[in-house]
Amino acid sequence: MKLMNLVRIVLVATFILAVAACAPAPAPTTVATEAPAVAEQPFGAADCAPNCTYADMVMCYPQLGAESDWRTANTASFKDQSAQLGYKLVFSDAQQKQENQISAIRACIQQGVSVIALPPVVEDGWDAVLTEAQNAGIPVIIVDRSVSADPSMYASHIGSDMVLEGKRAAAEFNKKFPDGAKILELSGTTGSGAAEGRAKGFREDLNANIEIIDSQTGNFTRAEALPVMQAFLKKYKAGEDFQGIFIHNDDMGIGAIEALKAAGVNPGDLFIVSVDGTRGGFQAMIDGWFQADVECNPLLGPQVSEMALALMNGLAIDREVLTNETVYYPDNAAELLPTRQY
Ligand code: AHR
Image (tube, rainbow, N blue to C red):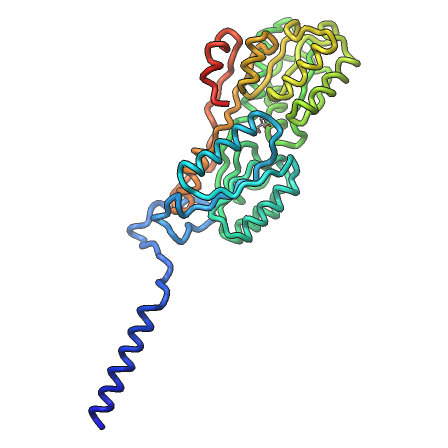
């Protein structure tokens, strides 16, 4: 009997040990002494921290649209990074509609992505969806344009200083027209961080003797800029009523040039400053149509990917990363064009 009891105890103990061995391993925990610096952001690290690699990463990129060559290069930069580094990119194209971006973000939250990188079409109206991401513990990196939401609602912003770009454009007009002038503005998407920032910086630094006689949006596209320029030309006589145009991106600049040429106006007789520094912008400088092109760099994939991995690993990150940019001129445009990546 004693022997039978002993056999039973051994069998039960063996069974318990076997069950314990088959149970799923507990989620990896970070040991305080070994843990890396904790990011100053309200999102926890991923379960794989501190050893997450790109193979663990699923990045949501609800691209705002395909409105310009700049945007095409920006999309390519993220797709290339995902292929090179080996992370999964959940990409969508919102066709310049905020509601499409919000739906795409909600789908990504449902899917449980590791990080959301958001290039916001406009500045306002993100609070609700940013709160949803925050509640789901998914960090959001704002990419390219800014948002008006409180910075505590997202991990970081990586992009251009749009106000500085506007100031750089103003400096070109101030140099060209020390005795004053009348100019037009072809602005980007209304309510976007890019258009608002550029318009603000431009007005802050433009000399008082240079008057912006009219400003209309061309929504950052060639197709929409063309009729806006045509309408300007019906209202104002080029050279007499206005001497220059500040254009918020190269695509709109190219659309405007088409309209000017079609109306029999030589674009080179006006002072045109654009923004982006795309190949199209460089060609317009070589052709004599743009007199300066303020750089806005779309190749943000590498920086955003690196920060996304740092967030997953619970590492400290910078809350704002602004791209270092410059201004390009016609004098060396031909030499630089072959080196342009977008
Ligand atoms: O937000 C960046 C701007 O958006 C670029 O200047 C423009 O080309 C793009 O469409």
